[in-house]
Image 1 (cartoon, rainbow, N blue to C red):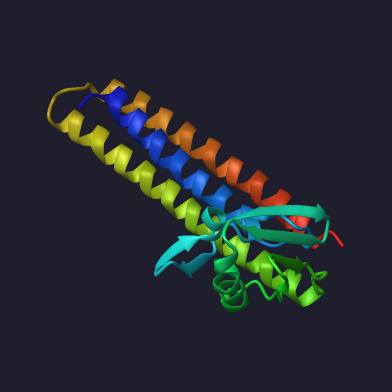
Image 2 (cartoon, rainbow, N blue to C red):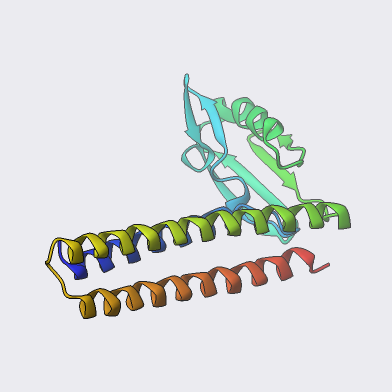
Length: 186
């Protein structure tokens, strides 16, 4: 393995951690209807667990309303049950073959709880970023110890890994601030 491969692997690990953060943030309720709130809910249908987005079309006809339209009417009860059991705190209203999910406005206390949760999630991702940095640094030190790179190469590549770390930590902060502002907006 050479220093370029180590840098690439480190960047990929950091990118994967950041993508995870974005994915998790998309499922956090902000008071606006978004298909991302429910599309990954597990539904027990046809005897196997499936994601809601595999069983239905999810749309937002109004800013505070989600409509779930199952592909197969036989799954309506399964979908309704999964939505009730989810931690969203939204009561589904079944209307024949449609399931309506009115999104209630968030209370101040719930907003604070959501912000606390996203801050915790951001910290978990920062830890993953620092872990990727440590693994990259360890890999470079091993190359130097084995005589495959010089001391100067080691320092230069460690600087590159630190730059990557700083970039991703900054991206996390910007994303966190934007999501927090979105949640706290009344």
